[in-house]
Image: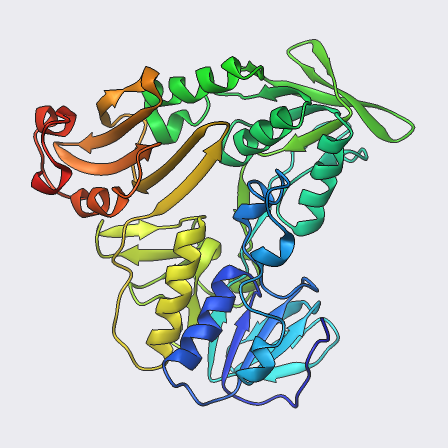
Length: 409
């Protein structure tokens, strides 16, 4: 795509041309913001959605064109200046300017930090070998797709959502797949032992060699390319290794500008930085005050990036809406599709409606008698009903009773 350039002008500058940033600029124009908008991103691609990179696109079921947030001409048509493939290197709060890597400075009236996150890597011997991959960008997904097409032996470090989705895609493509997880069960901290155990069994039933409670020691290689992974003294052969151990929010730019950073850039319920009302943060990098839960949340999911992007645009345009929704995400693995809403913890009580073994059930997480999260597995068109239950007190026996309609809880 041809990058558009214009003379620097005060208005709204968005740093980060990902999903959240794209929805900020869309929301601004939808709310009749008439000032200049500049979208800065260090990737050359225009904004795209990342879930397909570990789901449909990785599995060969969708084209990458379907992942782009807007058609190629949308930004010019809506008078949004794009500075793609250019890195923002500094924020000058006193001058209200953003400095780009080439030395150019862009003035802003209001600034949105949407810098996203970077995959964590394992600081182990051999981690720099060719074939040790992470998954965040289109090129990463392309590299993993090539490995799947070659029927490679794939070792995946980490049994989180990304790791399990890659494992499912690789097994569907005929690869030999080993997943190494340090916890006793995959997703244990999010799902608790009962539901986490269901995901573990799902993958083992599909031929994934899932090793839990395991510790990686090093990567082995020949001629600069990875050949194996050493785990607790045993070497697992690997043509490709995918490291999926989470992501770290890109907070360096904000921290260098003197903004408060904890697990992310700390904001109020309107996504404005607690240090500077002319700066907002959205998406993976934002640790925002959530009015539903009453505390700060940082959420790395597709739905949150869209919603926060829309909220930031509305706030800048003069609205007073707030971050008041429960986190939501979804996954597709083998024949399991699910949606999850809320913010459960490992030590929450879990109530199951239906039978885990049937592959169709609803799970509820309760904290002090209040629904903290819910998940529908292969049961559709119910997630909005589950969302409505978050934060309410419901007797466990009613949650478990399939004869009680969700709308009656």
